[in-house]
Length: 111
Image (tube, rainbow, N blue to C red; front, side, top):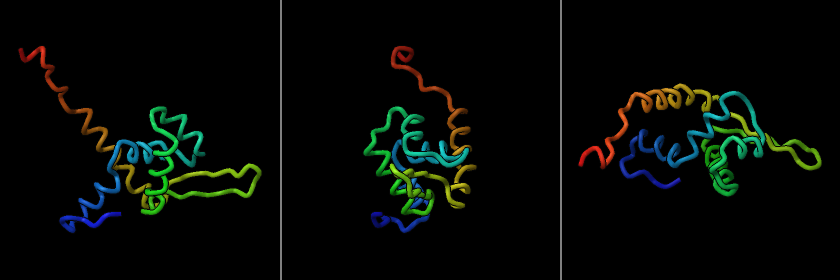
């Protein structure tokens, strides 16, 4: 990861969870381990490349585990670590907070 500008732990946490998909990945793994193809199916708008990159970043940060089973073809399963499970209340709270926001006024209503 890049160096922080402020040295603040909030900046690092936001960098880790930044982007469109990382919080959603954590959310979809909350009910248990999933295969790559299951995550692709759950998250229809994500590209294979972006899913791979985000899973790697979350794995490097210690939030997600990656288990490869020695089968033919190899089966790869992703799950949350203890650190990932500790993030779940924050992800849920963020979603609940967003649900309380008023929708922005449209430009037509303002005119």
